[in-house]
Length: 276
Image (cartoon, rainbow, N blue to C red; front, side, top):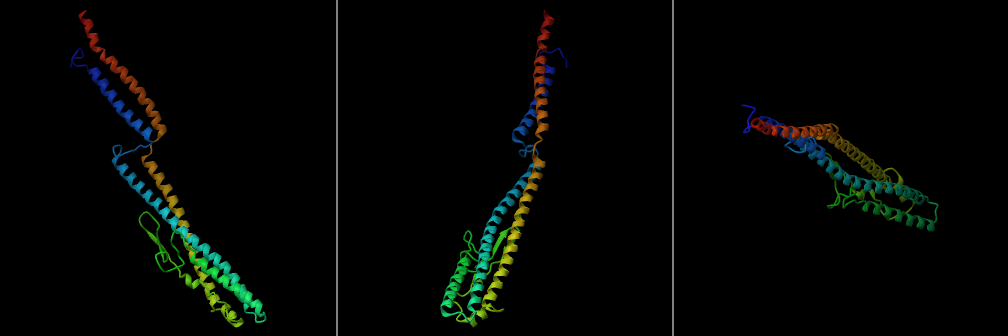
């Protein structure tokens, strides 16, 4: 094809094609700069976008698990606080029972200690009954509020169970012992007080272990989310330093392309000089 044609300007066509390519690349760089993503949607990279969406879904799942674990932790903390207070109160009960087991105290003193025993055991009962969080308790096996708690530990639906205990077994009768012998029998191994005190110690140990597990799971899930986000960033995030350099280069190319197109469009005007 002749270069000396007013019907077809090949130089202008080439210049326009180059300018269109530059504009297309510039549009892509501007998109990456404005969104901060190398892969903002499936049009950029369908495979990478699909993987990224799966990772984002997993992150959302682990985040939700963390929130649910917080609820279980709240129940455990409430339970542990109640049992710790009960355990401390049991020490006072033990001291009171020891005094009641002394046959040398007079009737007035025994009445005072009996009153103290009744008040302390009632407090223990109240602490156990009040150990609820968000309508749930681990110190009862009855009703919708009590019973074992099964929690979600990961985004895959894995579970763990915190076993509830019967709070009634952790309580002492509020009626004081009838005499010194009865008080002494309660204190001895196998007695009511000794059995209840041992049960409280066992419950504290079990719930303490459960609290440690939940804390560890929360910490692990938090680190897992960080790791997943790091991987996600490596997959879809844009390198803004590199994109900035590309942006400046393409803007320069665009300006040169516009100037080149303008020069090419002047070609037909040159042909007019041949007829002067």
